[in-house]
Amino acid sequence: MPSFSKLLRYGVVGVIGAVVHMSTLFLLVELGLTGPVVATTTGFVFALLISYGMNRIWTFGYVGSYWASLIRYCIVSLIGLGLNILIIKLFTDFLGLWYGWGAFVAVGAVALNNFLLNNAWTFTHKTSDMP
Image (cartoon, rainbow, N blue to C red):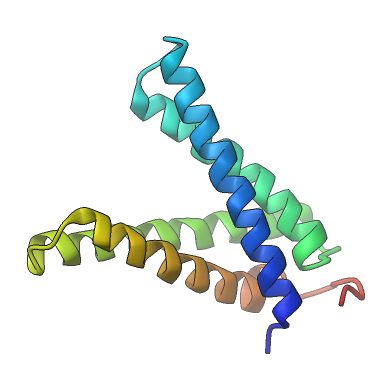
C-alpha cells in the first residue's frame, strides 16, 4: 500500500511538472519561437524529464536502473495520455458534455492511475529507506 507521504510528494511533483509544461508552452509561443503544438510537445518532454527525476529521487527514493525506470516511466505516461484522451472522448463524443468537464475528471483519474502504476511497476525494486 502506498504511503500518504509518497502520494503527497507525487502531487507536489505533478504541480511542478504542470508549471514547467505550461511555462514552456506559453514562453515559446509568446516569444514567437514556435507554434502551440511544438511548444506544448517541448513542454511535455521537459515536464516528463523533470518529474521523472524528482519522483525517482524524492517521491520513491529509487536507486535502481536509471534507463529501465525511465522507459517504464515513459510507458506509464503514455498510458496516462491514452486514458486522458479516452476520458475527453467519452465526455465530448458520447455524453455530449463540455470538454472542460472531461479535462477535470481526466486530471484526477490520470494522476491516480499514474501514481499507482509508477508505485507498483516503475519504481518497485532497489529503493532507499525513504519514509
